[in-house]
Length: 123
Image 1 (cartoon, rainbow, N blue to C red):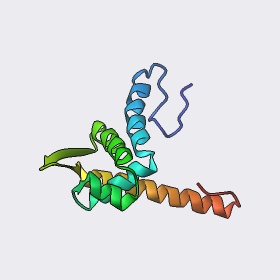
Image 2 (cartoon, one colour; image 1 turned 180 degrees about the vertical axis):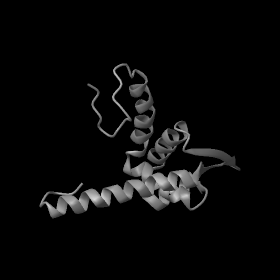
Image 3 (cartoon, rainbow, N blue to C red; image 1 turned 30 degrees about the horizontal axis):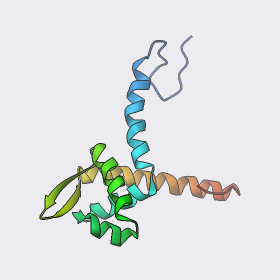
């Protein structure tokens, strides 16, 4: 008997690609699962920034910001180019990233409200 559960149209006994497909999304969510990287993306959504500008906005060390920018660049979420001696970063696919961040914020608000109504500590 095939069980139905809503995540897939039907259970598949030999769905070896499911974990591989999920791991791609999980890798992206792992990159997005850091508060500093989310703050950097929010700043870059407003336009290109030099590393020094991001360090000033976020109050973080240059090395910390550079590390997080490298992770975001490696994931394909941002790109960088040289402008004189400065390295300038910009967000790639800003509309798609904004949709993901908005959805995550909405889900977080729903979970927090649900936890509060049940007397639990929210996220």
